[in-house]
Length: 627
Ligand code: SF4
Ligand code: SF4
Picture 1: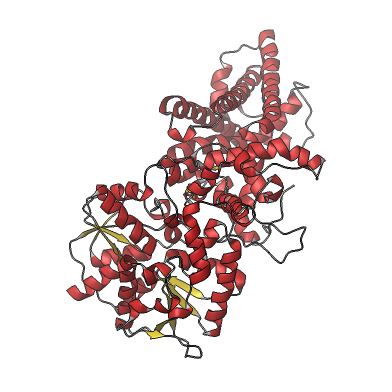
Picture 2: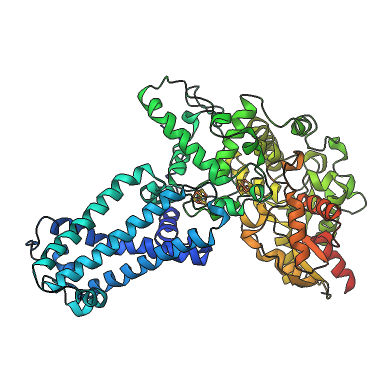
């Protein structure tokens, strides 16, 4: 039923993801306690799987003649396997007890909106499966029916003391094995109707998860034949097959909801409920679509998801990073936006000027393009004219640093530093235009693609091979999205290049004792793994202090997903982040993104916090002047 999507490439990475995320439970271990609980139960089922097959045979014959030399007969006789079974039965029971404790005593907020009754029933069924297995093995030992040396299964052996070698035990042995098999069969029947469908779907969902950078969005193909062309997701028939698999893989664990800045600040969006609501819609309309292709499927917005939910998202990717089964929430949200914007012309009214300015002026500030390089006057940086010699490094300034007064300072500092280190650098000046990122994150793929094609043509004509960008959004688009349009360059963030120049001693900053806390931009840290270079710079200029949420688990500044140009409902994301920064006791809040600079500076003013928001490049200039 799903729309096409290419997810059969990059097999080695897919196999690695399956091994680490599914078998190794890597993403679940991002939270150690709940991760261990799930791992005990999951690994328990992997180890105990052969006992299910063995029980299914013994249920019809107390002493079956398993073919000599068959793998099952061999396994059943192995003491080490009996020991593993005992150990994992205990671990599964410990896991279930801990899961009940978390759900009934701790009651974390992440479970709000999940089907808690279903989870209780499933946990009880699993406890029943494991308990009956132990009791069955114990009764077998009591009757002398065990094929394995009893001493290797100490728990079952100890429990066998509860039973004598008599007729009652013979009856109980039948009761336990039948109970065991019947609970498993009930479990299998219930599975597809519950959130535990993920037992069947999570493995494939992880395998077909994205292997490219999280910040990359799949382009729409406007040249596709009419019957294949997609304008995002309007109804269930537009959701890609991976998107449908996503909806059926959700475990309702709420890890995504727990880290979502929109949810944390009282907005309607919960990434968990978004996926659950899409799933309910797919189940409600999918069978009819499969039966009758002409069925008039109803719009996803507002029937499955409200308009506000679609526009609340800042595309920070915290949900995707956290999700243990590789669900891709941002792709769902952007696909919903694409349909609303390009087909229904429906989007928040306050963002209309931004889209208009990008289209008309080539930047969301609506400023004339010929003033784009005004900030660089007197700095001595070369502005590339058509036909000029290509520089070693092209500095992609971005719209914010070109036109916003506060963000301009970072562009000036970056250029000063690169020239001081004798880097052969140049800028495009008026020939640079918006990368199209805000239009794309708003859902206007047409506008994005026209800017992508125009910028790639300019960069290729200029012979550019290496780009340094100070805006993480530009960085992400240039590095991860322009290759889809023929633009392949080595792209680095300005913090990476500056850290390299410091390590090569081409820049020699002197650190002082100012306490600095660094705010990771989502599009730098989480979407693109740039974590260490900014920290090296902080350590080179002052005394680093980490915020509680940092690195790949950073908290958004509130500007992503084109939210720089949208009204915010609920409490302000930037103010929440500023309060967290202030809790470190630092006097300086270092940033590496012009949007973070603007948003957090606004947050400092609103909360009247005593913090100086400043780009790392400017801190580095100050540290050089100190030397
Ligand atoms: S991308 Fe960020 S804002 Fe959007 S749903 Fe995920 S966590 Fe929430
Ligand atoms: S989307 Fe992922 S993280 Fe969110 S509730 Fe579902 S499984 Fe958990």
